[in-house]
Image (cartoon, rainbow, N blue to C red; front, top):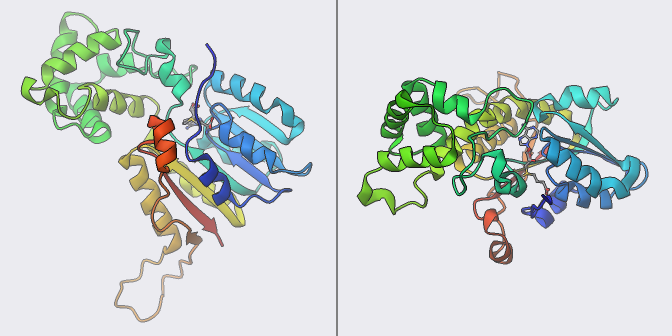
Length: 311
Ligand SMILES: C[S@@+](CC[C@H](N)C(=O)[O-])C[C@H]1O[C@@H](n2cnc3c(N)ncnc32)[C@H](O)[C@@H]1O
């Protein structure tokens, strides 16, 4: 299958990066290489783009797309949580800019056998990194009811989380839940008929929750932001595109804390904690897709770009 993915907030992200032609850049979520391609276009022979993705298909697609740039583009299959070590192995201690375009690519969603979609019947999988052991099938069949409830409540923000978890546990007593359509049926039955029509497909939130859990998406983001800030040269920029409020909240509050890490009580006339700002938030409000982009790419609907600049 051809790798199809339309890059979101492309122009805005490239502008926000303030690219220096001889600089070093990191794309931690390379995907099809759409953002990386535009970065490479702006680099001279001394410039470098390091692209990381954990998905073998993305690595292959980006490799092809960025081939024209030769040594300028270095592609590595890994999790961006290891960015610091990965770059160190390449002899890189600091970079001039970082892009994270979070979540899954359209290619991953549209490749039925990857098991991300509730729209087609396929075995439950949802791994971005095909080498990983944990799959959506394990989560659905092996987590206890309380854990399932927490995952669906916290990562899906589904008001019927408790009932969905209960129905999953009941259904799997007879036989394991193996496919996306089997899971759809269980979720449908757990949501009162009257309320099913509201809020889109009944499985949407639960599938998002299981995907986030399967790929540890929020833990990875939360635990890696500090490393990314430390990787930046002064004036280097960290650009992050999020696709749901859970991710956006993490980025927004982290940026705020990095801008003002002082922990002194507000009534203190001067700071005594000694914690100094790491930089400034460039985007007071997140950058959103233009009307034009929304018209051509419905998947950009929930995208938000936030940018931080290192001192
Ligand atoms: C939205 S796509 C990126 C698309 C890309 N910016 C483009 O324009 O083609 C997100 C990509 O990030 C990858 N990804 C998500 N979380 C990751 C992580 N923690 N480590 C490495 N790759 C990750 C996914 O496998 C997917 O290919």
